[in-house]
Length: 320
View 1: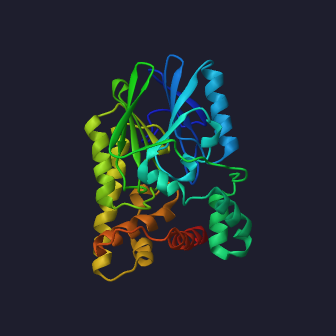
View 2: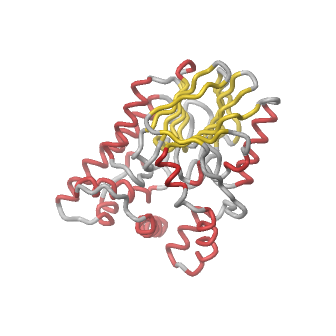
View 3: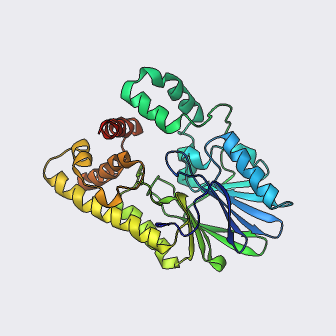
């Protein structure tokens, strides 16, 4: 079963103790996971999905399995659309995100994704890569509301008699990442702080930032961990992604000191240990984060530049 501790099958997964996950294999671009924490008739939803049809399917699945529940709270773990584009379908919930994540949501526009897909046939390799990643999703008609509540640091919510802790750990994957912990049930929902059996993406933080966020999960010692993408795991999944980041950090330093640019370094690093993981082009974002750190920079690189480099890497990989 690899790093997964439960079957990685589409749809509802009962984790026990009134915790649930909604899983979307294969866990690649846009195929994110969500979670539901239930106590009595009250529920807290962790993230929505990339488009309205997928989110509605998930909500229908939860309601069919758990009739009578009411989602009073929705937590967005970060601003990427595959974790928040369906927010409008939970209109009666308090929607919570970190202050930084709420700001980032203002700049990630579903209409822009729709426009890029429409323009993709004329964009060469970049367009082909973008279509490969995002054509399965329907970005039309999305009117994502702003979060109703924001916070910095830590906060908590009560679901029935169960306390759910929200802990900000960004910048890491994005600027405003949040971990969701149910201590009494030894369960953590990580958002994209954790990818399992898929190459991770680093948009905003550095490797040390990610390692610190992973260390926070380890400190809690949860038995069940629901990643943003990939199968449900345990601390072994955290250990493996940590090994990946540490390896990439060391390899990036060698190539940075040798004068290679990010594209050259990304092509030069061996990923044989993780050859069975999907989306290997994302090594570009990891190398870029390392180079930003080594240069002493703090501002994230332009997403368009990173996608262009990933498209070239993807094109080269499919040609071999």
